[in-house]
Length: 277
Image (tube, rainbow, N blue to C red; front, side, top):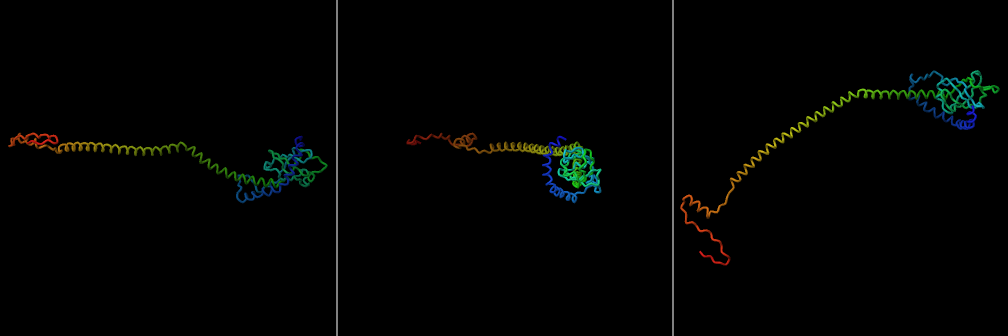
């Protein structure tokens, strides 16, 4: 209670500024709801019942400030978690069903609780009575019904995303489970390619070896022919002999008639000397 009293002035300033934006927030939040109704079908998995009135619910006062302007309400309705700050809540006392509805505006949300600002408590509660903690309230909020509808539409979209992700996860799980099989299959494919490459390698090396043997045979044949040509070149080399001397000796050795042995050729004299025969 002390915390409520100390922060009342600050909260009141916040609420007054928040009330000015309530109508604008209502218009903005209504647009995506209309689009979601047209584009997304709410199935049974969303737990949304179109025939149920989600605007009506009950609660109980658990705390309040001294001026009864800030009220904390507990509710067994789990949908109060969809409230947002500034949402309008109409309520009246359960024992005073004939009274009018009072207006309150949501300030904050807790699990199974929400705090609201009450503009005026007297339309639904007598001035002479004390507004006690534990008072049962009958509440209604079209904002809450709209929030529940939006939550159902969003939950339907989440279910579609979950279905998509589950399909992807199923495919990934199959890949993980079949990892060893795929590993063996890929290894076998590469082994087959390696064997084919090895065969091509062996074939290429055999071709090179055969080519080498052929070239060795050709080398030997060419070397043999070159040796024969060298021998023939020596045999068929033409010699130039000096017949002045060699012919007389040759005829003399063969017993042919020859002249007297010719004289040796005299060397030439020095320039200027006369020749004596």
